[in-house]
Amino acid sequence: MTGPPPLVLISHPMLGPMQAPLEAQGLKVAKGWELAEADKGRVQAIVHAGEIALTPEFLGSLPKLGLIANVSVGYDGVDVAWCRARGIEVTHAKGLNADDVADHALGLLIGAWRNIAAGDRIVRQGTGWRDADRMKPQPSLKGRKVGIVGLGAIGEAVARRVEAMGMSVAWWGPNAKPAAGWPRAASLLELARDSDILVVAARAEASNRGLISAEVIEAVGPQGMIVNVARGSLIDEDALVAALKAGRLGRAGLDVFAQEPTPAARWAEVPNTVLTPHTAGGTTDSIPRMVAQAVENVRLFLGGEPVMSPATA
Image (cartoon, rainbow, N blue to C red; front, top):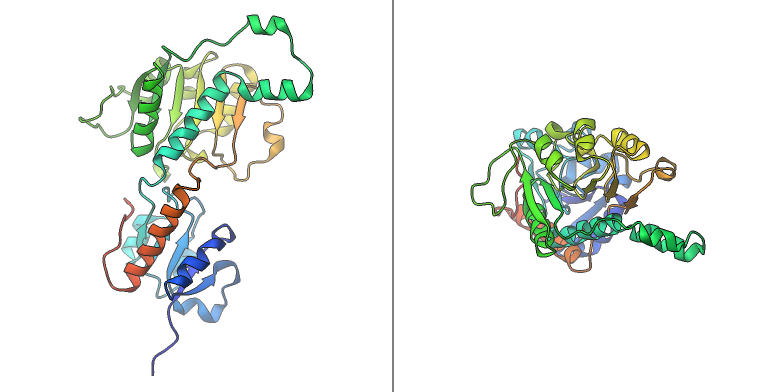
């Protein structure tokens, strides 16, 4: 007599729409926020959003768990080494939304540098439209120096876009890339000092939390800008807010935050910013690809086949 079928667990309500494509594959699905104690022994795979933490205590309560399939590209909420040491594979949506994230980074870059969001508010509110302000323009983007932190798929896509706009590119990451088409700075601090605009596109992990420190932020300087489309954990957000308020950093474009959702009050008095609610990677083109890959990884795993796109520990 066979036992009950294995369960695929959806980890977060945000991923509720994953239920239908998983069930279309004939899989039994449970919701993590409704999981009964009696069903924990049936969970063999988790479909997950990688920025959300999965604790060892929770994972340890699922004795048959063998796969965490992240729908996202990032997986900083999952301790890959811990999982692999316990026979749990981890996958992610490698490179599937790089162009979309790079497009969004460029939007934040242009929007913040050229004061587009602020200009929109002036027009809509009917206040502050002064001819004198038109004679105090921001420098153009052509000829500006862009420093990219992390030259993965997203970083490279950003580099190609800003280069096409007449900006120069340099980058920094902990590992050299001899085949890279742009020069690598000797250090992150040197990159920050030499850049008009610093774009953060690195993979987040425990070792680089707060990588963009107060020193790096102030090296970018009062005429410079920081764009972050990676993870909020990579930036010392308190230092960033303080530098923007004091004018030690010129401006910022952010899609990710230390806490998500970020409190609106935190940003109410912060000038020269364009903020979006962690939407850079989500488009009508990228999301179906990411969902399909996660579903396929679950199918492959439960079928005893090698998975696609394993995460890097």
